[in-house]
Length: 168
Figure 1 (cartoon, one colour):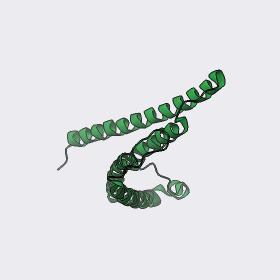
Figure 2 (cartoon, rainbow, N blue to C red; figure 1 turned 135 degrees about the vertical axis):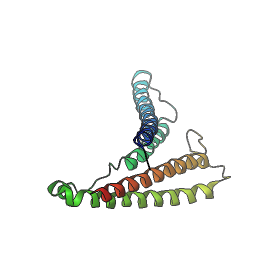
Figure 3 (spheres, rainbow, N blue to C red; figure 1 turned 30 degrees about the vertical axis):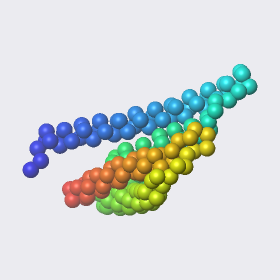
Figure 4 (cartoon, one colour; figure 1 turned 120 degrees about the vertical axis):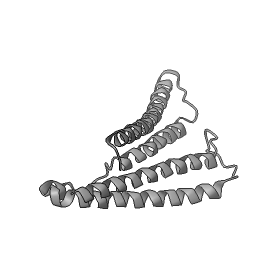
């Protein structure tokens, strides 16, 4: 039997983890923004550019978006049929929540499968990005690990949706 304190502690832990993912994502977005602004300013003031600026911006903003995925899945902030759930919330809200969270879980599982296979195939490869020289296998492993976290969060979203469906 779950006590209220145990449930509260689990909620606190999940909030801390979500905030860590969001803080990391925010830092990635800030890096991308700073590089872009710095590159534009340097071009305007000194007729020079930041080497690898486009690649760094792309990688940092992409990682920021990726790091946001687990939080979106865990909080089940995916798009649902709002009109139906607002017209008759008692009838549609819980089943549509389950359907949406199951869709998110399937999508997350497919992403893990595709990226995991690609990352495994690239192990040992000497490929790097063209401007910064970032190792492609290492980058793919980072992406695969974040996608595993997204899958775990999607599973938590399904669990929460099913609990809400049983309550209704």
